[in-house]
Image (tube, rainbow, N blue to C red; front, side, top):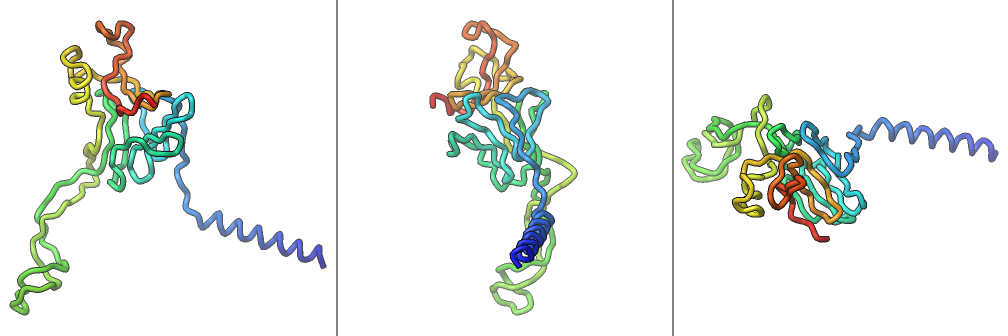
Length: 207
């Protein structure tokens, strides 16, 4: 009897596992990209940069938000959650750019639930009817920037006139101090004689 029960239990467990395997939707596995990203690379949702000491991680989440975490607590983000972000690339222009689908606001004649003058009842009320609405129309064949590393604003604030505002970056690093920094690793100047000039940062260092 015990053997029979054990065999039945085994079959039940296996059936449940198979059912679970086929019922759970497949997800894109996250990848640890190391502590840096270079031009031509990109993030897939779930990918992350991790500081060498392991205390900080910058992850592009499934909701579209790019977030820096310190030991599991968020300390900075792009505030792009629930934004229909579709790609995140380190462009040849030296900027990281997050994209969403293109589109524009347009007047569209549509049937909808609305409040206004109902031509049928001749009263102002909520009703279903046709009218022109100014709405966002998505163009799935195009992409447009949703967020980017704004080097043109960051450079004058941190370098003054000592560095051209159009200086590009080539390496993004998640540092051990908690700062996510975009560097130009080829140029040199008075303050950075050995290159590695920062051109943008999350300003979350010193932790």
